[in-house]
Image (cartoon, rainbow, N blue to C red; front, side):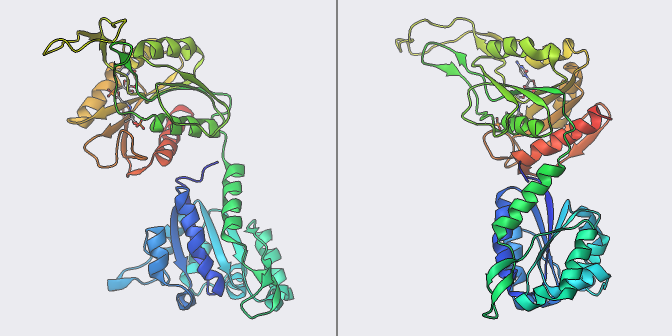
Length: 400
Ligand code: PMT
């Protein structure tokens, strides 16, 4: 299960274990999460905002009031998050949380949060053992929060016992498990048919006409649809990508004609069709049976039109929800909307080669989604996160 695209709010309170938060942030960012850090005022004595904001790629807030008379909106921060992690959570911060003592940005944000809360306490062993701390942990759990118990070992005081904050890997594992458990399997029972990658059109036994598609976008979509419970049929042109989820049936094809035939073997049973493949529009009229020799100064290949797979899916559409892609270099929106109508689609995803980091090969993409009545624009994101956005949009349209 990926935590890519998940919005994770980390609230750091003032204890020596705050230094471990650097590793936690690095871990979460590496996995594609969107991380926002806030801290109590005293935390700055242990770690710097600069190091935490460099790793999280976002400003770090510790006060209600920003520079130049601005206001750090705790309600907005709280509502943004998919999950809030309080780590390290000192005895003081824990006590304020469960008693509603709202005297800093962390507690105000916590009290405004509607998302689940995970707490990783850290303190000296006697403080951890103290009945008031244990009562506060019980109270936090009774609020529905997940408490990751402190670990045993040598503490900053030199004493040995339970009180060390759980290691960053343990906190990451808890977050991943949390999202795994809470993932809504909204596509359970649905069949999602996805085309991905390029097609290769043979000229002779050693040469072909192809394009730069890697298959990354389509494979990310396949994994995300499978995570949501769908049975996925992935029809892929040549690609070295791999899927990580089970429940994905992969059919490898080479040419547009082969992709066409494979798609229509499964199309009738599909509930959702997503065409992310970069299909060659033309193919050589004749394929030489032997390698073509370079005898002449110039060489001409006659091309004929390939079938338009997606257009045919649109023509044969019965119950299917159909999503197309448009890869454009100019008049992007006009061309995408044209394809939406011409191919009888429910939704089209536009990516433009004029946007840096978008389109072929990159691990990132920048998209706009159009339906016959709506338009939505997204930031540059990892292809895994783009797949989440696309499937969220599909679910909103298709399951409504
Ligand atoms: O694979 P990656 O490296 O991750 O790159 C991803 C991508 C850039 C290939 C992907 O995001 C993308 O844009 N895919 C569609 C590319 C494309 O061929 O766009 P198009 O505007 O030419 O085609 C419009 C739609 O018709 C597409 O959904 C395409 O799959 C479909 N089509 C086109 C021609 C054809 N003969 N049959 C089709 O089904």
